[in-house]
Amino acid sequence: MEVLKNTLYIVATPIGNLDDITFRAVEVLNKVDVIACEDKRITVRILKKYEIPNKKLITHHKHNKSNSIPKIIEFLHSGKSVAYLSDAGTPGVSDPGNYLVQNVLEENISVVPIPGVSSLTTLVSVSNFPMNQFHFEGFLPHKKGRQTRLQKMANLESSIIVLESTHRILKFLNEVLEYLGDREIIVGRELTKIYETIFRGNVSESIEYFTTNSTKGEFTILISNK
Image 1 (cartoon, one colour):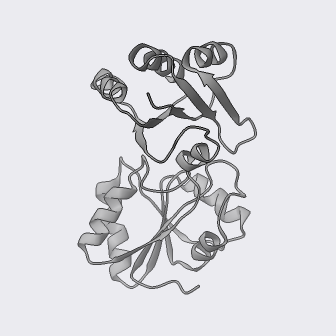
Image 2: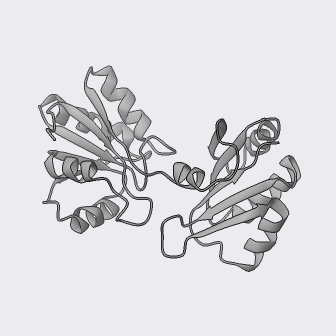
């Protein structure tokens, strides 16, 4: 495929297993002039895996976006092609990719999606819940506003997808039991990785399971509709 100059490519990358990348993504990474990424260490692993030659790398994350976005736009205006990679999965989902896209569009620069895996669609693909409609909640606030979000979730009719960290997974499951009741639930831990776990049961059973089993890693949780 041809990689266009003055173009930002939003490239989905693996969420764990490095084999989960598209041929098109590898081709784009081979051909672009610059790669913007959340974490250079993670991106370098992908580049080495697929024998992609050394590229100009720019770090872009939520803490440095005010500095990184002007640099990326400068490259684009100078005729360079740029790829953006998040730490894992599809950019724009719970990462600073949307800030970059917004600023690039305001400069009348083309943005092209290179789709692929995400933890959201990975868990949905093995769900037995009705998924013609679902609500993606992402990460809940750690403190302020957390209870309000849980109360709003309790009133939703659709299935709900939430992301949670190793440090708060048991707290979250107990909150789901309190606010949403003992619904059916699917909990994905370390999806696509060596220690992948997909738990199916109700919320109280999930609390029992993860009280006695590992809670290390990243979690994607699918809660059934009412």
